[in-house]
Length: 360
Ligand SMILES: Nc1ncnc2c1ncn2[C@@H]1O[C@H](COP(=O)(O)OP(=O)(O)O)[C@@H](O)[C@H]1O
Ligand SMILES: [Mg+2]
View 1 (spheres, rainbow, N blue to C red):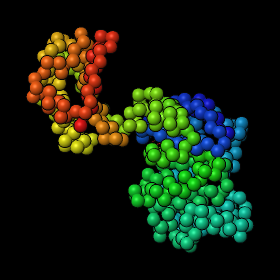
View 2 (cartoon, helix red, strand yellow; view 1 turned 90 degrees about the vertical axis):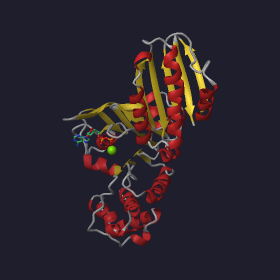
View 3 (cartoon, rainbow, N blue to C red; view 1 turned 60 degrees about the vertical axis):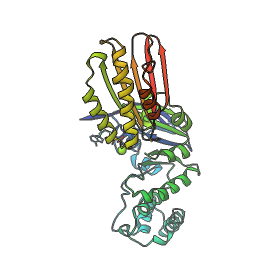
View 4 (cartoon, protein in one colour; view 1 turned 180 degrees about the vertical axis):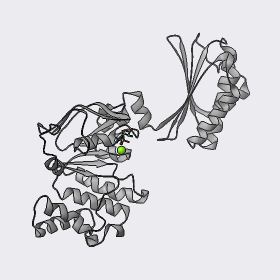
């Protein structure tokens, strides 16, 4: 239904879309995820021509919508958009908000527009709010009214740009429930969202956007369970990464301890876990490894904290011969390490040592 070919968008100070390609079938629900500033909104805005693409082509049912001859108003009717900020008319009642474009643009009779509006208000659970002004509604109700207004145009495609990001957390659920319902009714939808569980539940496909392209795409299972690319994995797991490279002979002990402290604080790692992280650094790296390898050997220390499951893993990588720094350490150190960790793995592959330490 939608073909996107080599879509590019250049702004004076940013190039959010470099080369976006996608095919989206009728009835698909595609969730678009990715770090902020990676062009997700720009992508949706190019699709309904709120932005003019710099290059590339977008076809809907085989017809170009990027050609100069494209009828943009007709296109926008086919393709509704729901914004983060609702964009309701504040001086009109909820009912009037939903009726106005039906009468003005689709030339429906007032009666017809009224009936359609009431039917949609029932569907989003707002029939009793028809005569209220937007300012009398909660954020969640405003967004549900905005969704009803979009649906009133009988769109074939609905674009959602972070529909719940401006909402109080208590109101996210009611809006997601409405969108979830729509997803079961064969409407083609593209949804930019940070609600990962929701995206996983309702989508036929997930696009992970980064670096100006659809960096990785797949079914929810492929993207959330088995992402193929490192950046996708880090985003999904909400990984916070600490990295420090030093050679055995020139380790800045105080500096590293300080930076580990800051890393723990910044990412709200629990007190117990951050103490255990420091024990692991102290016992495995500072008191053992640096004395056992040549002064010139480089050590790469990585800490990965997952905001998703609040797990913390230390990775310690270094060259030289096969060497497990835990071999031959004294009993006190050994018991400190075993109390601070849940799992430790040492591997030696292609001249490289790699330790993975799961911290409690
Ligand atoms: N109208 C605009 N004019 C200039 N730069 C813009 C405009 N819209 C977006 N950008 C820039 O394009 C980049 C991508 O923005 P956006 O599409 O909003 O990202 P996302 O929705 O993924 O957070 C950002 O660097 C942003 O500053
Ligand atoms: Mg955005």
